[in-house]
Image (cartoon, rainbow, N blue to C red):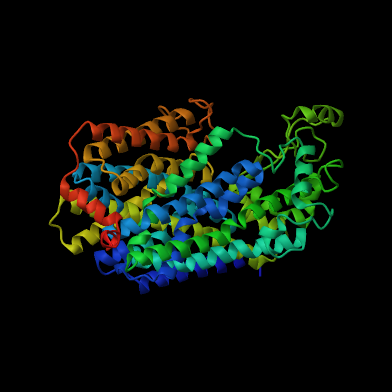
Length: 593
């Protein structure tokens, strides 16, 4: 059986499973569409939350960015994991206790303001649409390679599958579909990592193999990788080479952005009790850790494999020849990925070999002149292909390649469904029922929910054709937008007495300054160049657009407090409402005794 047929069986089988689950768990009421009837078991919800959380950025893109940058891109791991802990401890239980369906509804009721609810909806849609672009980018990459179709065709197929199970199933269908998707994605991520770890270190546990010895050389694996990269003019893999201040801000932006993402928060509205929300968060962290502890090993081992393949005789020897790439089955993966346009090389000096090195490194100038090198000849290596190409690079069996194809698509589609559901709920429940037509019937609201999700899918697919960066980079922008707008409003709503005017002014200020900075930094002031993956020079110190969300959040907090202090205090009934959400029942009685 050829590889294309194997891929088709794995991907087609997984899609049939998702659609079958959606038909079985079709939502018949608004309660089932928005919150799965509030009857999901904490373990089930934890697994669904993990799938919702671990998007294409986590599965497809994160390890690739770590592989080509090393230590400095561990910020993705630290920020996303830390943010989830922040969400679980400070927000999820209180929001579940409040008892609403959507984040925007909580903000509207807590700040006793229709305006606050509408502003929250706008912020939510901006952040969620940006996030879903990253998922559609991952769908296009995976389909383009494994089903041998164009990026556009891949996006359309992915959109159709999401439409089939999200539009009809709602939160109920999405929840049980995401459980299946988690099983697929974690299996697909772990099995290749175990194989590769055994090949390189003899240890079947990738996280332990990362700190073990490289079998072929006897050196510690990370020391071996550091030595190879330095010899090729790159920075050491294990050392910090970037700007520390920007790194801290980026990590903080990812953390608080995580805690402000509506599609993850909505998952905690699906469990029966507040205690179940806490247990869901704990189980989700366990399920997330299975992938996040493996990702650094996947990145490091893949980079070592790629370097060894480009310099098969060691970095002091000769580079791989074009003849070898064309005739040795070990290099078939390069020719396959070249057809997608996501991998490319050019023999600049006409010597029949492909030199892969940092042509900007001063330490290699003399060696380059001596050997007649004309620059790095591995001209294109899209970071998003690394995890998907890993089984082929390591020459693993065809069924593993097919499994990874299904896993990458499961990661992208599970998060896309959650995001689209958040957008749909905001439009139908917060805009239509909450503002435009409060007397709408349940059947009418459900129709609006499905129509708005269909429109959101169409918009996300269109924007996914021209993403503003690699999947993880695009997602980082979405986290920054959520950090600057939604997170401060939620935190102040639970733990402070900020009033409605302060909340509205803070959200508008936070998301506005963040959007302006992103557009200026990316060079999109008037006409966005959505194919520009490289940032311009930072406009404020060393702060990049992906890190500015933390600054936007500070602006939000500051404006909200200033405006709130300058206007009327919150009503007494709202103050009691906030205290009832934050303080457990019986706490006052316990203190009295």
